[in-house]
Structures are given as structure tokens and as C-alpha cells.
Image 1 (cartoon, rainbow, N blue to C red):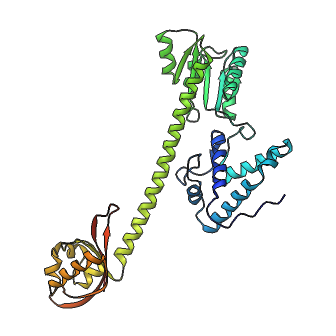
Image 2: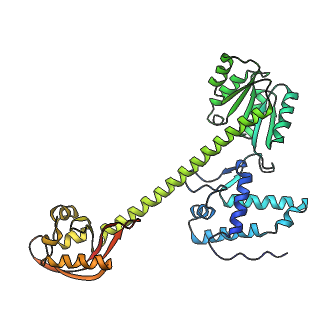
Image 3: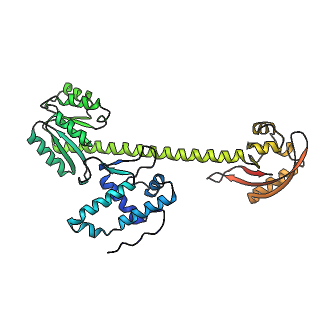
Length: 374
């Protein structure tokens, strides 16, 4: 079966975008970014995938190649990949390639694990109780790993970091709160939420649990649904924090982009070989560049702005000419090669030619006149 060649464009098709977002929704918890924080927009199930790609691939040719690869990967007939077990490996490889192009790779130990509500490490000395909890959590979509001691749990954590840890207060090699304190003292494990499970329903025991760094304390016997609700609440909070971090990163990128554009515009304005200015309708300069200050015989742009407070009478030889200019601008919003005779600082006169446009805010409010003078 032949696969149609995707169009040579730098925007993903709607169907590709939908499929990619679906994959991200199903697998995002199993992925980790391979891009430095803040270097690009992170992809998730609600982000603008085209904007993500534009932030990852700056060269047009590279971007076009990546878009083509993604369209080609998604265009592979889905029926062929899902009808038989022999195609599962091919499907997995294609999805891994898609995630890589989006700046992700699978976390350690997560590549072949089916997507789930989240991953949980259960640390309990009672193997039968741990197995029962694992079955109950798996029924609610969680990927569950069991450790029977703190030592086994640490070994497991070094292989794969779960979304949450459920720990019994009594373990064979230490207490649950001691284990919790050790994890919270490590920069690598500190961010993983821990729920402690105890048998003593006292304020002192609960205080000990929270002081160790646990986010919750449950007392046996309890309904598994209660644990599920605590895990779901923590997952929602983590998701909110992740989105907030991503939004902050995107905002920082936008701020940096805006700042670069402003710096570039300022350089163009200040270094232009022709006179440029911004002025109010009533005849005051807001900004002028060095070329205009030199043209009018002033030492600096600041000197011109400070000393000329009325363009109509201080610059124009014929003050009526300024009124003609304002009247024309109110009607047509712009003018090209508007010629006038003006006075320089030393009293000499020169002829100038101005090309001007009116600048307005998004709401339509007049802001200033922007001009090139020669």
C-alpha cells in the first residue's frame, strides 16, 4: 500500500495535528523533554503544535522537513498498524519518532508500558496487602510497581520515577516517615508526592507524617476510592503546575521575542541615515533620531526634543504650513513628499520633504505622527 506524499508546506495538516495531540494526551506522563527548559515551547494536548515546531526548528528547510516527516508518519494507514500484533512494534517506533520530533523521549522504563492515569509506587512490607492495592489501582488505570521495603523502593526509584508514592508507616527496614524524610532530602526525589498509610489515628501520628514531607496521611482501614481521590487531586494539581510552568515558559519566549523586535526597531530608528521622528498633533516631538537632530543643527536628539516645544512656530518658516499638514493628515491619514521650509538651530533655513503616516492604537485612538524627513 503506497503512502501519499505530503504537501511541501511548513504547517501540519489538521488531521496530523489532531492525531499528534491525541498521542500527547495518551502518553505525556510517560515522556520527558530533550530540550533545555525555556529554549522552546513545550508540546502538549492543547498547545499550538505548529508554534511548537516553529520554536524547535528555526531554519525554514529544517522545519519543512520535520513537517513532512510528521505528516508521513501519521499518514501510515492506522488500520494496518492496529489489526495485527505484528504491526505493534512498527506503530511503537513511529510514535517514538513523532515524540522525538516534538522534543520528547520516553522516560526510563516507560517505552513499552501502556498509557495510564499515572504511575504509582506502593511500598508495603505486607506483600498480600500490596498486591491487593496494586490490583485495585490498576482497575482505575494506574500503572503500579510494588516494593516490600525502603531499600527495594530506592532501587526502583533509581530506575524510574513515578507520579506518586504510597508508603506504609511500618516497613521492615525503617518507618514510613523516615523513608519520606530521606526522599525529601534528595533533590532528585523531593518533587514526587508521597501518601503515608498508618494504623494509628492520632494528631501526633498525623503531624509526624506531614512534618516528614508527605502530602497526605490515610488511616487503615480505608476505602480504595479514598486513595484514588487523593491521587487524582494530586494529579490535577501537578497538571495545573505543569501547565503553569509551560505557560510561563511560553510567555518568557514571547517577551524575549518582543524585546528583540523592539531592540531591532530601535536600532533601525536611531541609526537611520534619514531623519525620523514621532510627534503629537499639537506639535511636540516624542522621539527623534540623530540624523534629524543633525539635519536641524542640534547636538543630540535629546536637545532637539527639549528645545523645540512648538513645531509650528519654532521650525516652520510659514507657521500656516503646519496647519495645512495637520488638516491633510486628518483627512487622508498619510502624506508623501510634503515639502516645507524650516529653520535650523542657528537660524538658517532649509527645505525638507516629509513622508508621514498617522499611527493608531488597536482601539482606533490616534497615537502620533511617524515620519521620514529628508
